[in-house]
Image 1 (cartoon, rainbow, N blue to C red):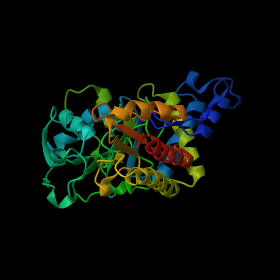
Image 2 (image 1 turned 30 degrees about the vertical axis):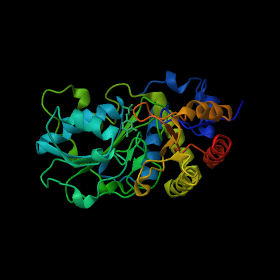
Image 3 (image 1 turned 180 degrees about the horizontal axis):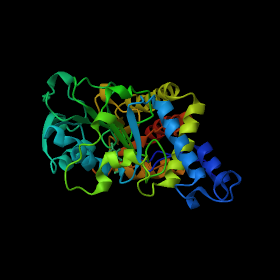
Image 4 (image 1 turned 45 degrees about the horizontal axis):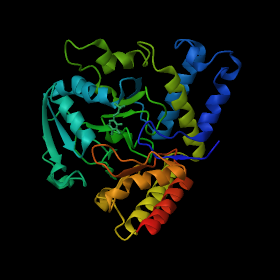
Length: 361
Ligand SMILES: *Cc1c(COP(=O)(O)O)cnc(C)c1O
């Protein structure tokens, strides 16, 4: 098998060890004669797999006891609706921080269920920075404050959790969860689609403080009520069993790496390698993002001459550096450096950036 490094933004690279383990267990899970995907979600084997996945994530993130952990479906995109459907009615309005394409989608969906106050936005500057906290026009009576800690498309990341007083903080952590330690007690609700930093697509993780359960808007489908899922331990209906199993293997792998502090150090080193290659290219490459807000997970960059884009993508693919094409809405390139991207991958990319600039400069 050829060695490649997959820089795709999602679905994204998985730890090689996890894939090997899944292959080993694919047809016959630990001698039970069945594949995980053939098991009843209510059988002893799968209940054990789900419980292990839950305890793994709880341990990694240090999730306090008064938070429920839900394994849902529908992606982060369904959470754009479920959050207001369950929470906005408590006050009738919510504050949103607009830092990019994913924030915008969350805002558009929330507007269908209540009043949305965009308390701060970096849209005027092309979403290349984070509006300073001192400029946010927060409503102290808002039901919650929603923000996107890492904008996967723009490559803009908050490196600290903002202080919003006593209002519940809601975060779309799809592309940053597990990349570094985080104090869950600062949040009312955290959600994340699995396919960036957790496992295969099809699973959505929701971490919700218990007092926020039980406020769902009238007349909604029961499946959109967090409390229903919490009351049934995420087994009201058939959960995405195979993605939950894979996520559990990833959590075990993260624990073996040393946990989230170790991942944070590794992720910071990976990002530094790639940003340095961009910044030291003498203008051959350019990253449009404010250095203070540059993402560890998604590095967008442009070539000084877009006529070279095609050649760049061809030459990088020939070196086994895959999926570097930028999001269609911004163009250019994007390198995603999630947990499962080894340091050798970031180093190979940095070296390629230098080589390509030298031969095409
Ligand atoms: C990928 C992504 C989404 C969309 O996730 P789906 O699971 O496809 O709905 C939303 N928000 C962020 C920050 C993302 O990275």
